Image (cartoon, rainbow, N blue to C red; front, top):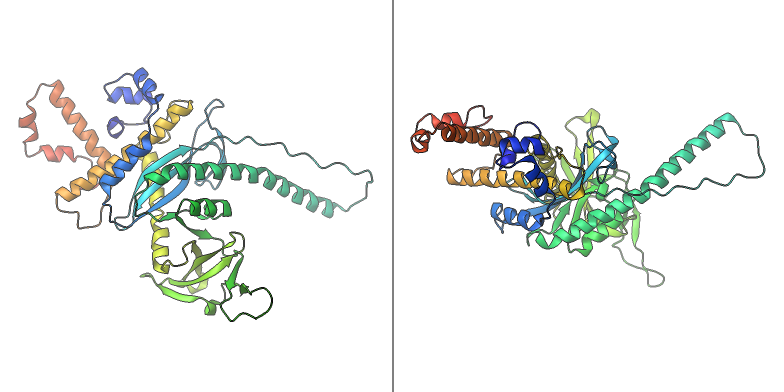
Length: 413
């Protein structure tokens, strides 16, 4: 693929320099529609054996893009600077091989721009009262906070609907063994949980430490009156009512319990992680799953595997030009995002086949996109030398130093 050998940005101009087609041809091709989800699904089926432990992961990534005419330009959260910024956003659903620690893209969708409705100002009152400066300042601050919240809530709600619609489309293409969808704390919302449950999946995500939780009452009920549901508020500083779920290799302890989440309005299993390696600065985290029967260790391992989707974003941005689309049209942007992530899937698949051919498939899979791209570029250059200089390809490739030239500049053997 040309994306593997291009140096610099993976835009139409550069693709025409390294490929066999003109810039105009690439522009025309990117405007054509293609159903990428079945293509991604076939790549995943070839890369992961059906009986292996797999989960799904969903997350969004910010794409830098300037200009007013680009489709979908809006204010999106940029994790690299921890604030909203003008640009594009893509939502990706990936399938993760838990044992191999490898993720593959199944679906990518650009987030549409959300139209914001103007918030009407409060009607001025007839009577005017003198107020102190401190009270007026505090009231103005509270008003600004409420206004910003009123602006963002409808936007987030519309975007969540788009994420759920994407998941619904991709659901039939997920491997049959996938029963869990992992996501970060942004997705721990009632609308998301209900939508995931409707698709016959369980959500694994993260909660705030101060989440409103209740212990479920399991004692004897009174003969009269409504049955008792709750047995007090969950206080994570008191671990006596939590079950010990195990200890990780690094010494982190897991505590688990089935509780009632007030906002989600359902029973969930929580796993409370306590890292006491540094007593002066104890680190904690609160994970949860809608599957109340899941093992606490498995819940932790699945959530940890979620971070493979972050490596997908990293490799695609650094090596396959995820942010380099030279177009403003919706279809061209969609084709570019899918092509970039499809190239990454293919690279991982070929690397896996190479390891299995050399007898290294029994060891944990190691993948370096930098090395893979270097090998692809070196191979492309050697083929060009052989073709342009009219050399004998059999003689050149059978030379003992050919493999050394092929791996020239690679980061790993």
